[in-house]
Structures are given as C-alpha cells and as structure tokens.
Image (cartoon, chains in turn brown, blue):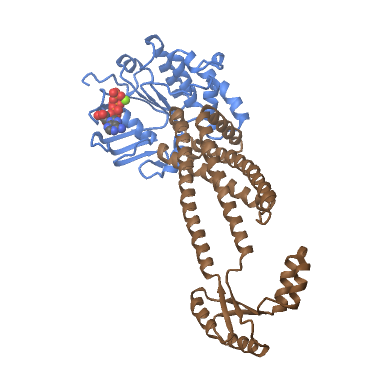
Length: 295
Length: 228
Ligand SMILES: Nc1ncnc2c1ncn2[C@@H]1O[C@H](COP(=O)(O)OP(=O)(O)OP(=O)(O)O)[C@@H](O)[C@H]1O
Ligand SMILES: [Mg+2]
C-alpha cells in the first residue's frame, strides 16, 4: 500500500458512512445492543459464580460425631476416616473450636456465647474434602458405617444442582449470543451491500483503470471496522453506567451479596467489546464484499 | 505487441462469440475493428481487457499471457491499457480534474505527480478550462474527451476504444477520431471498434473485419468491408 492512499481511504470511509447513514446507524444500534446484552450476561454469570463459591464450600463432607462420644472414640473415628480412599484433606473441629469460630462470626452477640461455654451444644466435627465427585455416595456410605458417627452431611446434591443450572444458563446464553452475533453480522452485511450497490458503477470504472481489489475494498472494510468500533465504545460506556447502577443498588440493599467492582472487570470487558465489535464489522463486510463484488 | 493465436471464446451459455482468431498487432499500430452487431467485436475487446478469459488458443499482450495470468495480476496488467467506452463511464460525482486525478490515485501516484500531470493531459484533449465542471455539465463529445484523458492518465501503451463515437453528435465525431490519431502518432497502439463507414474510409488505416465470430478480412489502408 502506498502512503498517499491512507487519507483517501479514510475520506472514502466517512463519505460512505454518511451517504449510507441510516443503515450505518442501524448497524451500530444492533451491534451495540448485542454487545450490551453479551456484557451484562457475562458479568451476571461471573458475579453469580463468585457468590456461590464464597457461600458454600461445595466439595466438602461434614461428619458429625455422636455428642456423647469420648475422646478415645473420636480418635478411633479419625483413624477410620484416614484409612478410607478418595480423601484429599481431613480437618477436625472440636466442640470448643466450633464454638469459638461461631463466637467470632457473631461478634456483636458474643455475650450470648458466654453461657454456652459451660454447656457447649455443638458436636465434634470432621470436615472432609474429597478428590473424586463420582465416588462420593460410596464415601458417604462408608463414613456412616463408622461407629460413633451420628450424621454425615454433604452438599453433593446442591453442588450438582448448581452445576446443572450453570450449564443450563451457559447453554442458553451461548445460543442467544450466537444468534445475536449472526444478526449483527447480517445487518452489517446489508449495510455494506447497500454501499457497494450505490457505488457499483464507480467500482467497475475503477477496475478498468487498474485499481486493485485492496484499493477498492479497503474503504468498505474500514467502514465495517468503524461501525464496530463506535458500537463497542458506546456499549462499553452504557455497560459501565448500567453496572454501576446495579452495583450500588445491590450494595445498599443486599450487602451480603458480593459484587465485583467495575474497575476489576473493565479492562477485560473493554478489550472483549472492541474485539467482538470490530470483528463483527470486518467479518460482515468481508462476507458482503465476497458476495457482491466477486473478489 | 498483441498476439491472438487461434483464439476462441465460448460464453458459459454456449454462445460461440469468437472462433479461430489469429491477429497480430504491433506496438504503435492504429487498427479499426469493424463488423455487424453481434459479430464479436466487444468480446474481442473484453478478452484484451481480461474481463473475459479465452476459452481456446492463446492471447499475449506484451509480457503477459492472458490465458494463464493469475487474477491478482489483472489490475497491474490493465494499467498498461487505456479504455474508452461508448457510454463514457466517468465518475459522475467527481469533477473533470478529479476524474483524471483519480485514475492516478488508484495506482498510487503521489499528489505532486498528479498535480503536475493532470493539466498536461487535459490540455492534450483541450479541456483545461473545464477542469472544475462535472461530467453531467459537458456535451457527449466533451465527456468522451475526459474519458480519453482519463485513459491516458497513467501513460498506457495501448488505447482500446469500443465505439467511442457512438453517442456523440456527428459534428464532433471527427474531433474524437483526430484525437485518437494524434495519440497514435505519439507512439501508442490504438484499437478502435466502430460501425461508422465514413470514419473508417476517411482514415485509411488497418481494418480488421469480424463476421459471426470469425476474422474475415484484415488489410492495411482498407475501407469498410461492404459485405458485412
Ligand atoms: N456475457 C455474455 N454472455 C453470453 N453471451 C454473450 C455475452 N456477451 C456477448 N454475448 C454474445 O456474444 C456474441 C458477440 O457479442 P459482442 O458483444 O461481442 O458483439 P459486438 O460485435 O460487440 O456487437 P455490437 O456491435 O452490437 O456491440 C453475441 O451473440 C452476444 O449475444
Ligand atoms: Mg459491442
């Protein structure tokens, strides 16, 4: 490419966008909506994940020891557990430790715990992290067989449910995104097609005087990229305000829910928007040129 | 040098537009191509432009073999041709100056060269004072002169004109023809497709006659072939 062509290319691009402004605007709006929806979904999913992970330790089994068990019996249970397979980590939490941790969790009410210290209602507990999900029912069965174990709690069902829900959402979401993306590309294809048709005579005259395909198509490709660029910048700004709004609403009303601050995701989101937007613009344009210009 | 060697052209719909064409045109020649409507004259020009590909035989122009030339080379090949059509095909939204300048821009000439060359070329076709006008503000003859200026912009070796006088006022036809002859005397090969007997007869140049896809006559100093 010759350097003197660059101002020409950009001049053509903006002339083209202007001549074709309604379609260009439509492309920007569709692509913009698509990006905002994508961004919102991804951020929502991300936040849901973070919250689920912080609320429950999902790959954990809690073995509750019979309240009346003696220290020796507890020791025997510990030995039995350590002989089982599929165990990654065992932590013993004694009655006293359990009470302490509860006390520190509800610091404001710590006076309530003073009486409990005399007559601790909490059992001794083993928490077990396992290695393999699929072997969990077997592990639970074996744990229940150990004498002195009063109860075995596990969250494998919840874990599976949550996993299923996440997969379901992701599945629907991915299809939704794919459709949106196709729609945006389609709109861009039509925009560029219109531009090419408007300039059809000019393009064929250019061919006769020896214009390369590169020279002819570059203004259109830049047009597509500019549409993508504008849509992604607008989408980023909109997403930012939307997110901050939801963030402060949740923060004020449901303080237990963790919301990742926008600043932590803004860079990745911005780059993703830019890539998806410009890619949609350029891909749409390429398809259009291929179809309508026999390149 | 242009060399058609047993060239044929069959369109995808089965029409045999040209068959067994043998024709050699040397650098600097002036050639009229004549023949009835549908004889295949435009097809011959389209082959030269490499808008269509030969379906048989070989066609060489200078160092290029048009039958085997890859597509990406077409634009570079066309830069040594200057095309003039009966419907002018100017850029309607550009001024006369811009029309000529754009042809140079397309091949990447720097602005300094463009600024220097455009006035020179416009003066050859006698349109310097109209440089600010748009094509629609000019007569057919003037528009064709702009087309000729644009064809000359990149200093091509060959000028191909497909019925350049067809849409021009009879009084102005000679003007265009004289320009083409003038360009020819400056060393460029000029090929003119035409229907007009009086033009052909007047100039006494080489005349190639096509009839139903065959080359039936080729003579220097020839007259319009009366039989076709
Ligand atoms: N693109 C095409 N596809 C199929 N057939 C074509 C095509 N172009 C031309 N033909 C046919 O090829 C034959 C030669 O056409 P061509 O245009 O070369 O004639 P011509 O000598 O230029 O005629 P005219 O004097 O009317 O311009 C005609 O029968 C025409 O119908
Ligand atoms: Mg013709």
